[in-house]
Length: 157
Image (cartoon, rainbow, N blue to C red; front, side, top):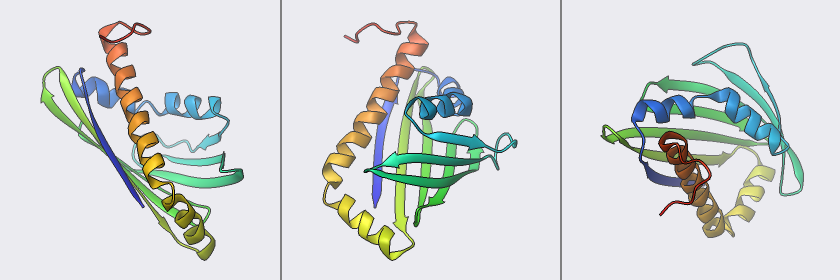
């Protein structure tokens, strides 16, 4: 199952990349949402996380690995757990010195029969999940713009 979305952000590519690779902030955000996150001591490519979280009423566990991080263009994370493998690819493109396009592609594949059944149940709600995925990226992009424009918390015109 594949999800993809893209958003344009009014911020320079290097600032967007730096924010997206602030993994400590991402870990804190996951902890606030109830996940348990443990990171190995490696910094940069090779960083590994063990993550435990609740999804659809069941405790899930996965291991994620930062496979590529080429500033300021791409971030690639592979993960596996609960019978699934997934790949997250984030591409950043400078549209101008002050505008960046974020393109996110998330692919999930089953490795076991129970995981295949789980993914089949998700396919029934794929349109709603895709909408949530795109809405999440949209909110993230607007948050980045607010952070870099100094208008955090103010409504956008």
